Length: 216
Image (cartoon, rainbow, N blue to C red; front, side, top):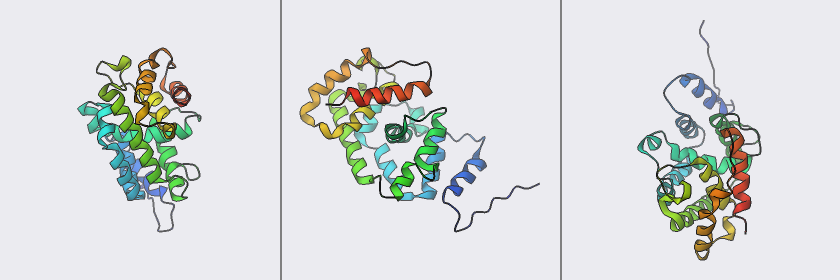
C-alpha cells in the first residue's frame, strides 16, 4: 500500500505544512526547524520578518544562548513564544511545540499567521514593539537579564516569559527614562515570580504575572 497526498492549487495552504510534518516525522529536525520550513513555504515574507527579529543584536545578546541552542534555532522559537504566549497563554498548553504550531501557523481561524493575512496583526508595529522591548532590556541588564538574580550562566524560560513578555505587553508605557525603574523591577522579580511543577502549568502563570508586574 502506498499512501498518496495530493495538494491542489485550491487546497488550503496549511496542507503543505501537514504533509511536511508527516514526511519528516521521526527525523532529527527539531520543532522550530519544522516551523521555519513551513513559513518559507506558506509565507516567505513572514519568515523574513521572523528572521530579522530572531537575529536582532539586542535580542540575541539578552538571551546569551549556548551554541547548541543557537544551532537548534531556539532564538527563533523564543520570538514565537513571545508573540504566541502573549496572546494565547490562557488556553491549555499540553505541549509547547504543538501549541506554537497551532497558534502561530496551523489554526485556520485563530492563529497569528491568519491574523497577519486578515490585517489584524501588523508586522511592522509588532517589530517596532519587539525591538524597543529588547533595546530597553539590554540597556537595563545586558546579558544577565534572564538569569536568576541577574547573574550566573543559565538562561531561564520562566524569566523570559515574565520579563520579556511582560515588558513587551506594556512597552508603550516605557522609554529610556525608565531604565532605573525597570532595573529595580527586574532585580526584585525573583521573590514574586510564580513557581509551577511543569511547563504547561507554569507558562500561563508567568505570562499573566509579567503583564501585571510591568504595568505602570
